[in-house]
Each structure stands twice: as C-alpha cells, then as structure tokens.
Image 1 (cartoon, one colour):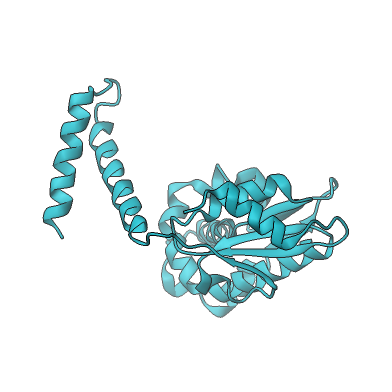
Image 2 (spheres, rainbow, N blue to C red; image 1 turned 90 degrees about the horizontal axis):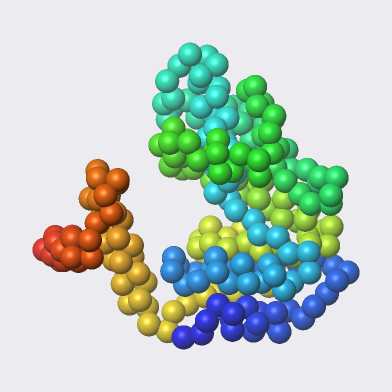
Length: 235
C-alpha cells in the first residue's frame, strides 16, 4: 500500500497547481482507507485549500431542532421533522464569506446566532445532539446534499480548492471531474482496523470506573485478552 503522503503527492501531480481557479476535489472510499489523513496532507500543499464536512451541517440542524423543542417546551420526536419544519431548519443556516476571505456556516435562528466553527467542538458536540443526530440525518439527507453542493460551488467560484471526503454513495451528487477513489491493497485491513477500534474502546471503558489509578501493563493485557475472547466467541 501507499502512504497518505504518497497518495496526496500523486493527486497533486494529477491536478497540477492553479492559483487562479478553484476546484472541487472529492476523495471517496470506505472507512479506514486514509481519506481524512490524505485531505490533511492536501490542505498543506494546495493553494487556498479547505475541507468540507457534512457532519457539522447535520449537527447544526440537529441543534436547531432541539432548540426549537426547548423553546416550545416539547420533547423531540421523529414525527416532528415534517417537510415544513425541515425547510425552516435549513433556512436557518447561512453560508457566508467572512471578512478575512474565508467561508463559514452561520446558525441563525431559534435564538442562536453563531458560526459553526465557533461551536463545532462545544455546542455541536453536546450529548443531546449526538443522541438525536441519527434521526435528523435520516430525515434531512436531501437538504444537506443541496446545501453542501451550493457551498462547495460558492467556494470554488471564489478560487478555493474544496476537499470533500466520504463514502461514494454520499458524494455522487457533487459534480466534479476531480474524483479519486481510495482503496486498500488488502481489504481485510478494514475489518482488522475496526476490530482493533472496538477492542480498544471496550477496554478503555472498562478502566474508566477507576480513572484515578493508572492500570498496569499486566492488567491492560489481561483486559485485552478477555475482550478479544468475548469478541471471537460472539462471531
């Protein structure tokens, strides 16, 4: 396989440098193929490069929905996401150019008036939003696709190189000749990576109850072996 640095260099070579026009560059592939790492490499070498995340838009919409419920004193339910409410939520997002020439999404509605970049790691990461996020995402795929497409085209028209990464089925709506598919030379590595993530998460959770005491190497190894045995017995 190739490292993210090598892949990024090959993509740059294919694109060629251009300082007078922007491009939308799509990196698609399964989880674990190095899309995020490659995007980080490209951001450092391409002129006026920026990455786009649909995830923050879904979180912003979820935040707006929950604020709406809070203001009306009601509990959030999936059936509340009517076409009218969805239209109202997405109209509360404004993609705008900032004074420094950059772009950001403003959440403006239901008592909020903040930029996504200001709250991406605070308000939008609250547990209540994470809990409701899957429901909102299922109901508002179309709205987010339209919003993301318009945002990417606006940045591209301003001369920016817009890097979009994700799964192929969620990025097919983006019109661009610059589309790259990232794969693994050994597909089984994706499964191994996922298994390692599950193993690590389970063991870390097991030691959270006694966070004050640092576990010994022997205790960690024992916990890893026990969790691995549990995982394999469930197959």
